[in-house]
Image (cartoon, rainbow, N blue to C red):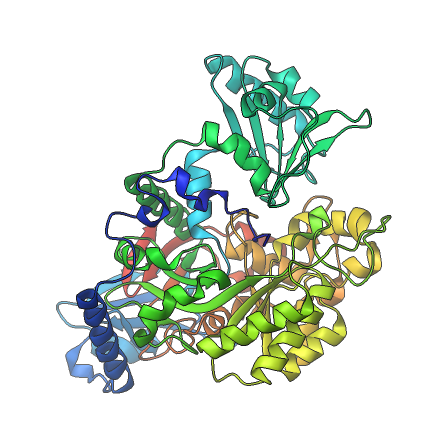
Length: 594
């Protein structure tokens, strides 16, 4: 079974009123002929207008001018002090005097008051829908809230004391590497034997339950492996120890504690999550593979109300569901669903698992282990899948945590696309343990990596001391090697698998600091601040086919920008993560204000 970046148990029909296709409302599904024709005509008109946009005469004026601060239109470009916007697009960037002629009696003027304005910050790999539902429905017991085991256990005991006997206690986002190791049935039984308890790990593939939960789920001591690879952990005595692995096993419990998800609840969850993502500086989120083609129409309608612009890839097994949307311009550019802030780009394949659970496929064993992990598909099948994506006319995004998986993914991409970017930027997602030769090969065949830099921030010490050893960990998430090779790269959070916030990614890319023990992991892979900011602005925009629209503040581009209380170039690299986000704007409209 294909293992996603995050377990897709929330995407099953049984948890949705009206089935999964009704996630965002009754109208979700394939477009009708009438609605599809309307989308197609509007999209064509939008593209024609964009291609023929005339220069705006100064006499026409600007709707909005922001002045009195530091405006950084593109990392490495000259700094300005003012920005002018009209019709949701950038009119001009420069000094205040140069833009004064664009001010009319109707122009809104925003005083930056010394703040710093950057292009809107982009997360090119964030599971928006899954994260929204998980954080709306489940208790977040992750490292950010409970950094040690004692605090977490105390929290669970408080929840048990205030919850009626027999009701489920369900936590999510537990991190076994950072919060004291695996939970056990015995430990959870000590918290309560009056409540069934389910603690979901942040990797999405594992959980731990107590004895009451095992009884309710009907899991007997002699249970074997389930269809789909689900299985249960055992202690040294051979008895069930409470650990639960993979979706088909976790489903035995989820059917008891997950209530039906209504369209109203789903929309509320997505709205709240995007508000939070805006508050940490994001103006654009790309959903890699956890949106279904049957949700496109309704998600597009919802997108206009969200705090962030959104974009999505579908999973390989849902690729044909994009067929009715081809006329929007699927392919090398992100295809906007007309009259919305939602677009489509690429097809996702998940080729291996997680290094933290030793399911990322490596060419060498994990530290102190004979295990190398294994890919989800053999090389021949992966090659055929990628060829099918190319034949469909789309770029491919392949999840690869281990270096063996990177090998077979690059083989497949080279065989299908032969170095061409005609269909868009082909991506390796995470590329955590990519080797030096693989970085050079990516450059040669025009493939770009996207790094989950929070691996270094939170797991750098664990990768060094527990998972790979110092030498291999020093080359994890090798952004520095990309800079030396002239290979564009991006940074992402893979939410909900790591905390949101592009500024923390930028800080870590520059410092390579693991905040768990304050060590620097792989200093040779550190990059400049310019390189790091490009990776969450123009580089990220290009990796989702929107470099011509967003990612930098240039005349004619959409006016997406993030305003910070401090200038990242004037604080220490470690302090960048703590810079307060003041405002975010999307298409010239303020979406978040602190």
